[in-house]
Image (cartoon, rainbow, N blue to C red; front, side, top):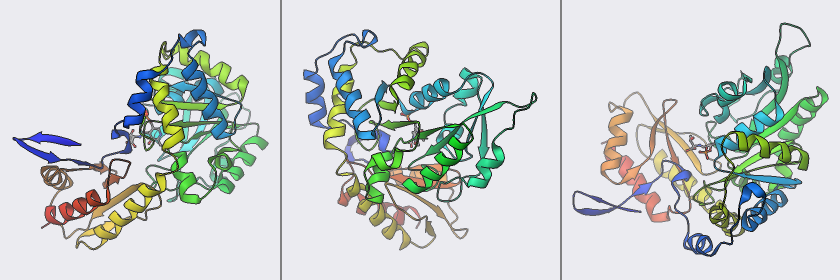
Length: 352
Ligand code: TLP
């Protein structure tokens, strides 16, 4: 991306998120040609195809196209739970921290946050301890929600075994499991497994097309045919019934066909960025396993995070500076090897 700053055409290295990704030329072409229809009548052939492909990729019976990851998670909560039900989730999960408490605000569902371990997992004892007994004073526990990869926990992927253990425990207690799999294909790439293995034990999974996969809009919620039929109602009441949105789904199809197999490249670049940053005095870097990298400054550095973010922006490098006291940089399709070197040098310069 280029931006015109004060007359100079500066290349911008945008590491704030993989949500900033522009659609690829193949996506724009597919959008232009997409066959469309009224999706509320189930008549958009491109959306129908994308939903079939998404379900197949997750090994589930059906899928629902929604505008965002936030909507996909909320639709899942509204479908699994009724008013007064409770959801057990991680205290650093996106669903708890960054979705406006939508489940409570719009669904009358209470979240019960339990500690996320540094690798994004939830301890089985903590889950078990949070499950409510039948008692007239208590809400009813209905659902456990996991996140893979875990955004705030260094983008760490959750293994299939870990997810299976949680699902076994939840199902034994008659609970369901929803997975916020916004970056599930990054998890699969990092672990070297098929994404189906990572989601086979959960009752529903949401994944995003509009992050590392570069589609401009959209996520897919996947689960059993019955679950998705109910979810379609929840999406509609939220105002998320779209009409000729096959224009958007067309880009999603390209995302699934062309953008998954290359995600490992983003992980390599994130690791190179980590290596480079580690060489800069005053910088500490968290372990990197996927495309999300966190770093922070040691006490010896006198600059505030805001000053550092501003200094970097002045050099054309954008990243987030206030993520629980850490900086976040996320690699994606539009970040090249050269951009990584630019970012490393910009951080070095910003700190001296
Ligand atoms: N995450 C965004 C911000 O909201 C923080 C980002 O830049 O990382 N689940 C996870 C794990 C996410 O990281 C996000 C977006 C969502 C859900 C929500 O997706 P959207 O933005 O499509 O609503």
